[in-house]
Amino acid sequence: MQIRFSKYQGAGNDFILIDDRANQVRPDVEVFNKLCDRRFGIGADGIMLVRNHKDFDFEMLYFNADGREGSMCGNGGRCIATFARDLGITGSESHFIAVDGPHRARITGEEVSLEMKDVNGIEINSGDYILDTGSPHLVRMTSTLQELDIVSEGRSVRYNDRFRQEGINVNFVEPFADHYAVRTYERGVENETYACGTGVTAVALAMAVKDKLYGDLKLRLQTKGGLLTVRFHRSGEQSFSGIYLSGPATFVFKGEIFI
Ligand SMILES: N[C@@H](CCC[C@H](N)C(=O)O)C(=O)O
Image (cartoon, rainbow, N blue to C red; front, side):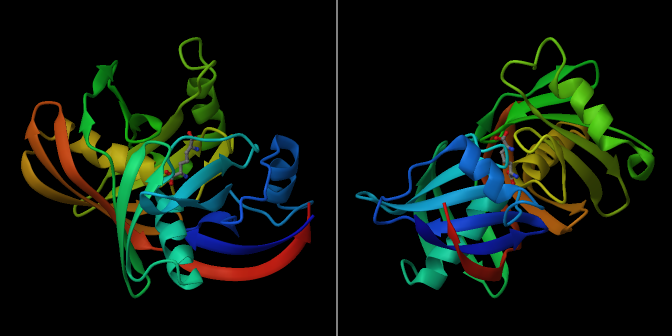
C-alpha cells in the first residue's frame, strides 16, 4: 500500500504524520517500527494517525518508535494540531481526542500551546517524583546533567523491578536561575530524545512541589531541542489544573512510501 506522510518536529521530538481520515491504515508494530528507523526507514521518535471523530475535530492515534501504541505524547499533540491545520481540517484552534482524553490546541506562528490533562497526585519516593501527565514519568534531580549517561541511567530505572512491565519515561533535571534544564529517556523509543512534552510537564509540576510554589505558575524548561514552557495552576498539595505546554512545532518534509 502506498501512503503519503509528513514529518513534523516539536523541539526536536520528531514524528511521522499520516492523514488516515479514510481509515485505511492498519497499524502494524513491525512496519511502524521500521518506518521510524533512522537508517532503514523515514526516521522518527513516533508515528501518528489523524482519524475522523464524530464529537471532535479529529482523533490522534500515537505510536512510539518501537511500533507499539503509546500513551499521550505532548510534543506529538502540538505537532498533530499543526498538521490538522495544514490539512485544512481546523484553523489555528482545535479540539481533539487522544488516548488520555480531550485536548485543545492553539497555534500562533510556529508556537503551539496544548492543554494537558489535570494532574491530581504525585508520589515522592527517595527524592524521585512519580506522576502521570498523560504518560507515566519519573523526575530525578541532578547537578551534573550534561555529563550524565542518560541512556544507561534511564534504562536502569525503566527496567527496574517496579517499572519493567509497564515501563516509565525518565526525566533528569538541573535547576538554573531562570529555567530548568531537562534530558529525557523515553519509554517506547528506549533512548534519549531531544525533548519530551509530557516529560517537561511532569518536571514543571514536580518542581512546584519541590520549591513549594502555589497559584498561577509558568516555568521554562530547556531541552536539547529547544525551549518549552509549562503554565499551570496549583491549588492544593496534589492538585494541578489549567496545564498548558507551549513551544515550537513545525513541518519538516513530506513524501510517499510503500507499506
Ligand atoms: N515524546 C512524548 C512522550 C511519548 C509517550 C511515551 N514515549 C510513552 O508512551 O511512554 C511527549 O512529547 O510527551
